[in-house]
Length: 130
Image 1 (cartoon, helix red, strand yellow):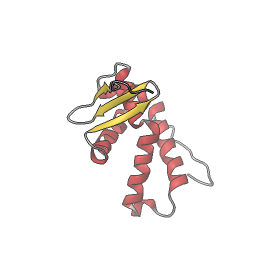
Image 2 (image 1 turned 90 degrees about the vertical axis):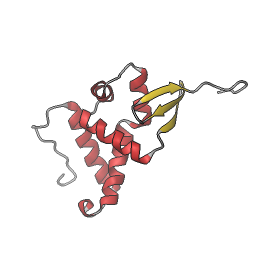
Image 3 (image 1 turned 180 degrees about the vertical axis):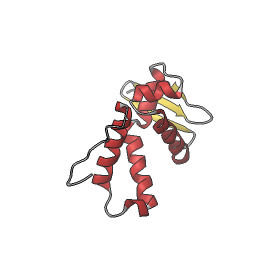
Image 4 (image 1 turned 60 degrees about the horizontal axis):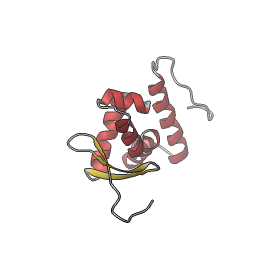
């Protein structure tokens, strides 16, 4: 980053890697000030924003609903590198309970993070609307 310009090395091979790098740079530019390398809490918050922005719990649910089963398939579906997905899952396992309720327009789902990633639809209770 120089003079409000971000450049990505030509050595970055995949679109998924470029997406993560660009999101990381933009998030740093908009959410941090000073020497972020010296502030581990700020770096962690920025990383969490990147995880949430690029994939999020809704992205994990949608990937599973689309039939993705392996980490590679989920990462490919979400448009991120597999290493990024593994870091995201590790972060989510630290941040959230093992089971998260994820509301989507098409229904509400339960996302289980441990021991493996699992999605199930939460059925409406009798008499419940919406």
